[in-house]
Image 1 (cartoon, rainbow over the protein chains, first blue to last red):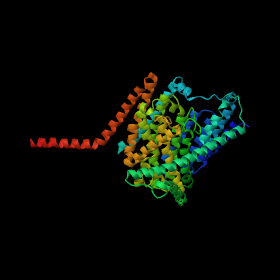
Image 2 (tube, chains in turn red, yellow; image 1 turned 45 degrees about the vertical axis):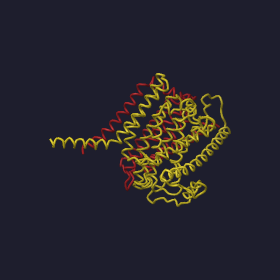
Image 3 (cartoon, each protein chain N blue to C red; image 1 turned 90 degrees about the vertical axis):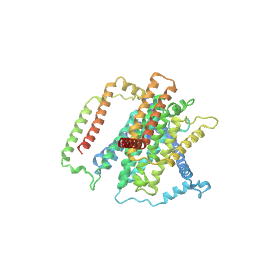
Image 4 (cartoon, rainbow over the protein chains, first blue to last red; image 1 turned 30 degrees about the vertical axis):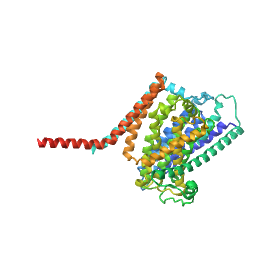
Amino acid sequence: MNMHLVIFSVISAVLISCALGVVISRNIVHSALFLLFALISVAGIYLVLLTEFLAIVQLLIYGGAIVIVILFALMLTRNEEYPRIQNNKLWPIAGILSVLVLITLSVSYFQSDVIRNASTTISPAGVKSLGSSLFTTWAIPFELASLVLLVALIGAIVIARSDKGGN
Amino acid sequence: MIGRMLSYQLLCSDLDTGATVRFMSDYFQDAVSTLISLLTLFSFLAVMVLSLVWLERKALGRLQLRLGPTRTGPFGLLQPIADAVKLVLKEDIVPNDAERVIFWVAPIIVVISAFMLWVTIPFTPGIVVENLENMGLFYIGAVGVIGILGLVLAGWGSANKYGVIGGLRAAAQLISYEIPLIMVLISVAIVTQTFNLVDIVNLQSPVPFVLVLPLGFVLFFVAGLAEVGRTPFDIYFAESEIVGGPFVEYSGAHWAVFFLSEYINTFAIATLTVLLFLGGWSGPFLPSIVWLLIKIYAVILLIFWIRGTLPRLRIDQLMAFAWKVMVPLSFYLVVCCSVYVFYEMPWWALTVMSLFGLLAVGVIIYRYITAPARKVAEVRERLRSLQMTQEE
């Protein structure tokens, strides 16, 4: 029996149920908590694929920072009623659209050659090779990504400032 | 969970060669041995926490011209056990309006992240649950973030405005101080060219890194104090202002869990300071584990001393200090370390650059502290010149 497969399936089961919990749960903070567990399970899948660095980055950025920022926003919005997903009257349309997207994506995925051509061996990439390829082969995309983040940062500051200028 | 996953990952690292296929019994044996070492670690940490509670009460008492605990056992040594028994026997109250699930999950998240940190911290080269050779330092930086979530959830879940304020403050403070902390870890990794904590300690055998990176040491220690919410940085649960912040509605065993994780985190920060900057377990004559414990307790006494001496920072001072002093200086340190490695300078060059940064901190803090006095002097000067002109 392949232990690798067993652990992969367990993590995937947890991941899928947590992801469902994010969507189904009516309490928005419970959704955030489910999102945290789902993102940690994704880190687990990275570990199964022997990419430890990616797993820890996932834990640090998504599991930590992003979920905290989401909670930060939610904590300021607690009223008598929780914001409920069903309050939006367009939810059946949104549901149908997302199911259509899911069907399209999965059909195109299973028809493509990605699965058949995928290699069955895993070559783990160390931090050093990752770093050197980031700063040589992929230097320009990397710098562009950081530029985009910088723009987002400055944009957030500008939006927060313009509020103050009005007063 | 991730600790187990990581150790599993190391166990099955032969998968990439595909040469050997391991069977269930092998994994079972490995799992059992890891479980035993984890249990040993947990009981060790519990004893350490008890010793810290006693030491803190005793040291703080002496600093405040009191005796500290004296009645229970010799020198009050049994006091922490009495405290623990009291906490566990207390009634565990859950507020009516609280989000029950989140109220229960929050302390668990906090304590799990506190324990997860310890999976990869080595006491000596031999005594470690799982030395993550490629990832150790980075793993420590990442796991610390999860605990913040527990605090935020605890504050929100207890349906108390003080709790919510405390949770918000905790999120803001801990995320801000996480950045300089990780930057210092990165600069240590740049200098040593490794993430392996055992290697980092071994590289310090002639010169401990506190001499090479004095700025890094100060930044790490201060950011570490902020991360565990020790006194100058305890604004997020400040008892006299927001009556305990995220912990305000917790009682009995639940509160004890937060207390436990706070002490475990304090111990972790002290241990990491020793491992990264003070030469770890290296030292003459005594066995290495004894040296490590001596150094750790020295750092912990320093932390308690700071707690007994300094008042707490206001929230705006706290955030300004993080973003205007700590973050720029930690980036400066990373640049210094990169330059040092790139041009292959001698190690004292890094010391000089680092000291320069430290001097900058000193000047900034000095000018900040003396700012009111300077303003008064300026106003006086202006008044005097006004009087002079009137007399003329």
